[in-house]
Length: 267
Image 1 (cartoon, rainbow, N blue to C red):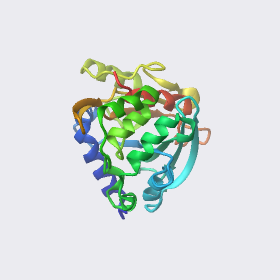
Image 2: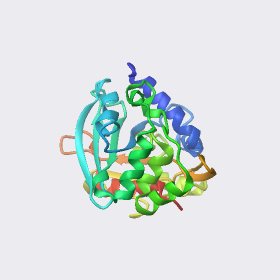
Image 3: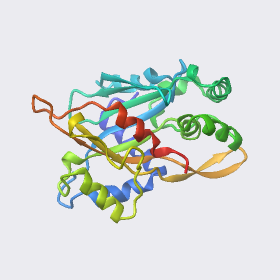
């Protein structure tokens, strides 16, 4: 496991950019030339709730770096469970980890996922690079499409594996933008497509968090029977509002996150 938080996030970012080239352009678009004001609010990771690769196995890498569990979330319609973690140093990104509850899925999906995961070396989970190690199994296009018909999340996980599903710009830290609306407008003007599920902006000042996100880039996936372009990862934007004690709200809003997941939907 990594001993340095910054090193881990640098590796996660580097890996994310290999399949999300738009993030680099957006980073440049939103940042001010005077200072490094594009700060990462949080990343999200996905997994399946199998004992060998469940949410807690991913979280262990962050707990080892001082992160603490802060909240849990249920997404009934998507059959997902999630937790978020924070570091004692509030300047470090928050971490949101979700897992697909396989027992709530069809027998067919459960079998496919178990067969894929069975191809993994069990030791991979504790390796330093696990959180950005990608996919550990071979898969064909028909299997991907079978998963896609039942769960966009399972299909995404089956081709991309372990990596940051998104990074998130803290709108609060930007020098050139004050509102999430102005960020969204700049993105659209520059030709980036936004996730409009549940509206371009999810959440409100009332729930202390507003979020928006791009639609995932598409990147080439190697299947056992050829290659195809598949939605990869996306970039999110978060504006947090102060709680009663004046500190910025640091949690997540399930109703908003539910729609953010759809940024990777097949189009």
